[in-house]
Amino acid sequence: SSNMTKCEAMGASTYMEASEAVDLNWEDIGFGLVPTDYMYIMKSSPDGTFAKGELQHFGPIDLNPASGVLNYGQGLFEGLKAYRKEDGSILLFRPEENALRMRMGAERLCMPAPTVQQFVDAVKLTVLANKRWVPPTGKGSLYIRPLLMGSGAVLGLAPAPEYTFLIFVSPVGNYFKEGLAPINLIVENEFHRATPGGTGGIKTIGNYASVLKAQKIAKGKGFSDVLYLDSVNNKYLEEVSSCNVFIVKDKIISTPEIKGTILPGITRKSIIDVARDQGYQVEERLVSLEELLDADEVFCTGTAVVVSPVGSVTYRGNRVDYGNRGVGAVSQQLYSALTSLQMGLSDDKMGWTVQL
Ligand code: COI
Figure (cartoon, rainbow, N blue to C red):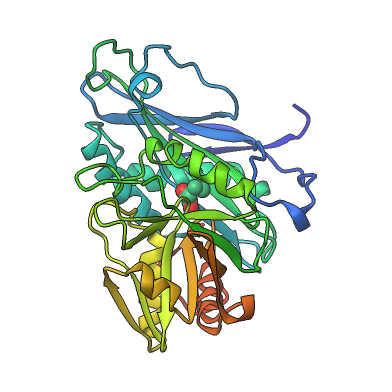
């Protein structure tokens, strides 16, 4: 087409990069799908390994109706972001961590997975092919969504005979409609997200379908999202449907420990390190509902939500407000520290960013 002005050869793929500026209002993109130019697809070989993938124009894919992912939920996803630096170049944030987490989930769901190198190379290729969709500095980021699925046909319950690794991207702004303003959470009293021995600790697609009902009810009542309690004692915090949770009490930061039922967030892990680096004491442990209701500050972390301050928590009809519903000082400090690293505005002494 006419906007394909540049031909680039990268690795094994040749593609025509569109160079025209995109017609998007960067001021209010929110978190919804904006179709971009290219997606990356790599299918497993009969021996179960991944060999060679390619960029294709973004669009629908062929999928066997009997595929493992459609019938038995054999699927994982990841989420990471690319930010545009002030000099126009692009930074990825800890992509190897997503690759490793996908490999861990794939092991649990009996799927082969791309190597860390294949994953990171594919992410780089996909971002570069879509680089006109990376928002200007401070206007958001390019959300990168890798998928791994059983695409081969099965009928009886078994691992699929073929797998597809796919990456698509979309420019995004704030996840919650509140923007950077504090969100209001409801503590879920009926449903649970995960059980010991289950799949709560991996990024399987099923974990996200199973929280839709509680989310829908909560949104109907005006809440932003749902906070889950552990399914054994109904007493300890687990996570929010789309992010991890932290509490702050007397300057000590605490977050539920990773024990198989909560998603090991990369933003969670990064915030723990950033907070410690800034001199905070951070504890990973069981955090009870009473502690939540008695906290000075509460915030959520995730790739999509970044650091989202919590303005109130409602449990069995009783609402607790934090910090006059303004952004807490610790949440604000950690948000600024993390995002300035991700945007290349501060010195990356942890070596977390990957420059494209
Ligand atoms: C992310 O934060 O990247 C996630 O995968 C959460 C999703 C519900 C948007």
